[in-house]
Image (tube, rainbow, N blue to C red):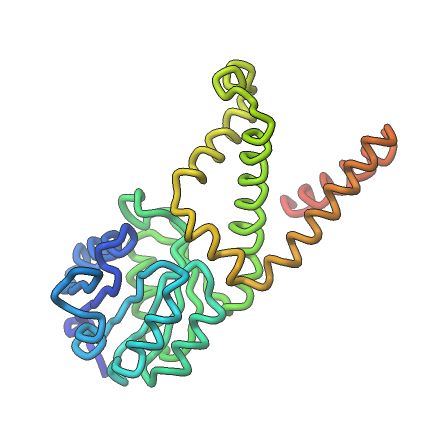
Length: 264
């Protein structure tokens, strides 16, 4: 059985933004950390063979590929974990290719956060109770809120939290661009609410486009939400075209009732 004092963390993708964040996080908790990334002398295979906590922190679209390459090399009493924003395929692949303990995680925050205090981390257990309890203890001790769910439940809610949100934000940005709306003038007339939306668009467009392309294309759950979103838009468009105030109010009240019920 691994003991706390013997844990040696290896981060594959350790020079990326979240890789560096976890390097600092584990280091501040007293655990030695080794990293492998493009250009490092140490390879992912080296870490898989020598570290007893192997964290895959590569871009989402490469996570399964890396897991398949290094999973069989991870020691049986070690932990193989990831931080990808989708869980179902990654967790099932880790379980398939490795005999080690397996834990899927998704930190619901970015590398700009100084620590985990007040942040949410999703954990999707695969195999290995000791490792799950150990990591959950470290996170909770640091002030994090830990949500333990299945990979399928995680991906379902991410279809809204990430997929639908990013989809609607990008669509709004593309519409503004397509119509050639002058951004300087738009900001002059922005309400506080719309100013926040402009900030959301700007933030989204400052991120890695490959990641935001990978999330909807690798999660089949997203399609259900996109189709329903499209249907709702067409319904609203029809209501407005017909100047049907009563139907508009009915739809408005239906949504309001749903959101109010969640507050009680």
